[in-house]
Amino acid sequence: MDRDSGNIFRRCAQGVAFTVLLGLSAAACAQDEEVDPLLSAEEAATSTSRFITELWLGQDHVSGLPNNRANLNRTRARLRVGMNWSFADHWDFTASGRIAQGSDDNRDNRRNNDNERSDSFGIDQILLRWHDGEQASLQFGKAPLPLDLSPMLWDPDLRPAGFAYERSVALGDFNRLHWVIGYFAGQHLYGDESRIGAAQFAFNWREGAPTRAGVTLSYLDFSDLEELTRQGLARTNAISAGRLVSDYRLLDLQLSGHTELGSWPIDLHIDLVRNFGADFARDGGRLSVSAGDHRQPGGFQIGLAIERIQREAVMAAFNSDDWWFHSNRRGQLAWVAYGIDETWRLRLSGFRELRDGLDEYTHRLLLDVDANW
Image (cartoon, rainbow, N blue to C red; front, side, top):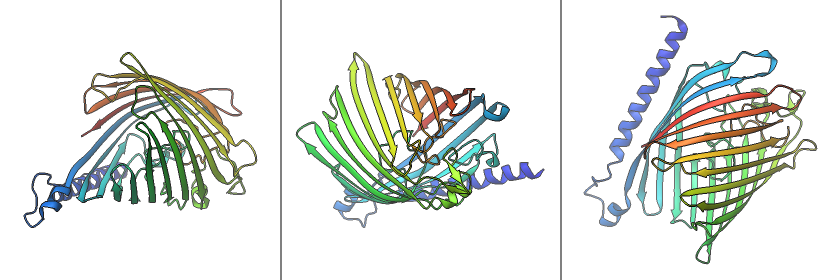
């Protein structure tokens, strides 16, 4: 067996072992119907659990890459397995592991502008959360960022570690105010030491009604970015003498609207960002519109998004890696998605991007298959 084959075999074996151990641990702790007889009736009523299983399969084709680079074709997969345990009134705990395998190699992840390693396994979530119904919550640990941000600012596959407080206040029967504050370690690739202070304030008008709208204002402050920059994750942000030229203090405004035409839900989303830590090329914008809902069995969704992100507008390490260039570019995205059943969903996305200073467009075609149990 050669070294590459041995490494792949070893990673697969470690990943399988990790998943099995995690599943056995979850099974031992998460028996929804079997309650410890020593628990009181009140404790038994509040102690519930559920398994978490998420599978993603992706086929990726990229053409028109800069510097006459050959077209990229690769297949990747990711499995998340874990549990959520509501162990007491107002308290729950989430733990999950993650395994990934790809046809490409980890050494290619930097030049492919990826936010995750193609081949890896490890902790996905470790989260302790206190909540008071839907009105307030306080969380500690490693989990998805608890802010509602567009792909222009944040990749939802990232898992920072830290704490956050959320609060909601109802205004009448349908309107709602919601805010979040938090502080996180970015925990990106290659020993990233970044820190992120975040705050978000949202007003939702006629929430849950067939026609509704929302306004969301967010602030993100990125610091301790030196290691991230040394490892090449700053990407299209400006660098001089090995250091970032700008700071990254982002103010983001999102406007959203929803209505229904017959059985077709229509969603419009506008996102505007300015980096107050930069003196030049500091603005970005995104417009997206979609029709349909592929989260329902047999449901279709079609959509279109347009983005323009100047070089310093966002922290290019942390926004969506579905787009090839993370800033310093303009582009369009079109997609169609289909919900096969309650578990499986398909999405085909086409990207057309032009990096500033180049004449040739980069094209990307992504086929995603998602499943949740």
